[in-house]
Image 1 (cartoon, rainbow, N blue to C red):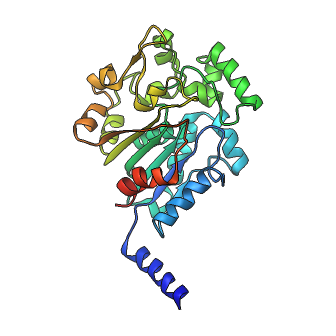
Image 2 (image 1 turned 30 degrees about the horizontal axis):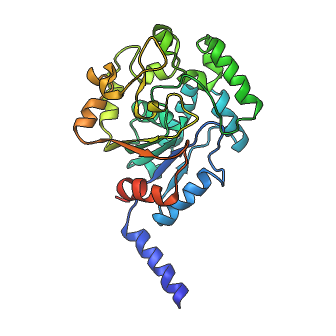
Image 3 (image 1 turned 90 degrees about the horizontal axis):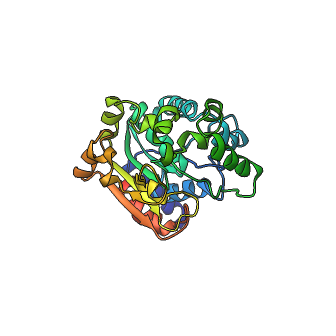
Length: 295
């Protein structure tokens, strides 16, 4: 009898609360469904929001390809594939909340800017590198040969066309000592940050968000500089001093709409006292699920 009553309550909750679907995109070296990472997050979201539709993007025919593509598939092609998957899902037609983990955060931002249908309502970035990185001190699998190979390639020729075309991390490599080369040859990041030319569609689509949440991990040993997680970056011409988002031309000229979002109370800055993507389920419920996913 107790079991039946419990099931009735779950069914009632599912019926009464039409949760907005949730879309996830994993980070470098991870996969859509790793039980130790996104698999655990998916289950926590479903436990918190019974009946919610959750999509964890898989780029490739299987988990192995999905992991490999996080290193070796052109990001623009990945974003195109993600847009196709999301548009073909009828359960997302009324919109969805998006959560990006590490590099998956800037990839989902590209989805929001390039593919407004279905609409992204709340865009949540967990450790995303929105101004790129200048250094690759750690991968999730730091001893893997891919990581060492990537470090060497990025340090030598991040903006060579064939490196940009084949190495994901090169596409958001941002060299503050060579700003013009970065803007000219960055296949992905310079484009979605409106640094090549002003794409008003990107700006308008970002402005359509209900909320844009940026989570920075204060003790991050993976992202250099960590301020990139809040759209800050090294001041051009050197790699020591940081220019915050609010002091940057990107904000002052508002070419991406971040200033307008901020002034409208839709741009949120959160921080976690931990290393890259180190957070508890309690923190995730309090700061992400309750304020942004449960409405």
